[in-house]
Amino acid sequence: MSEPVVWLTIFILSVFVGTEVISKVSSTLHTPLMSGANAIHGIILLGAILVTGSSDNTAVLVVGFIAIVLAAVNMVGGFVVTDRMLQMFSRKKPKAVKKGADA
Image (cartoon, rainbow, N blue to C red; front, side, top):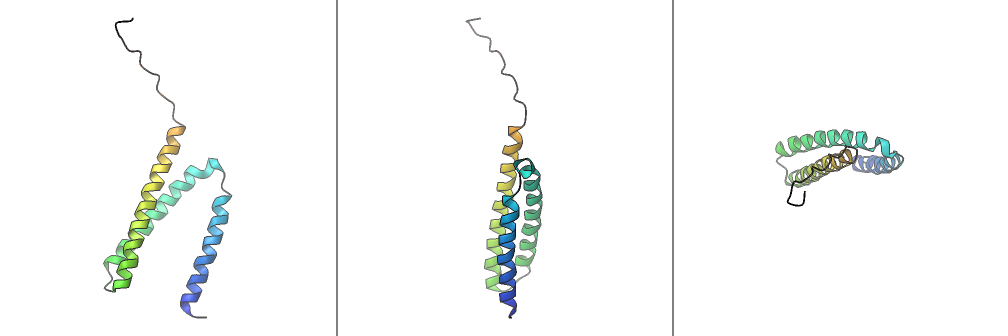
């Protein structure tokens, strides 16, 4: 088997395993899982920047740029989703009574 076929097989199998694992996660574990995913995407973003910055090959530069954009979007989106989920569990401040002419 050639090396690209091996890497493609590993990638496809990891997509299936990842889909199965994520679909079985309960909602109470979703926020910690998102925090872990954000950390992983930060590492992926750093790796993509390092590889892209040290390459002279045009194809690697294009793929690296796409990886940087997708990792950044995924990481920022993960932080936004995590923040919105955490806001659902925070207590709301009571509304202040406005002083007006009707009082």
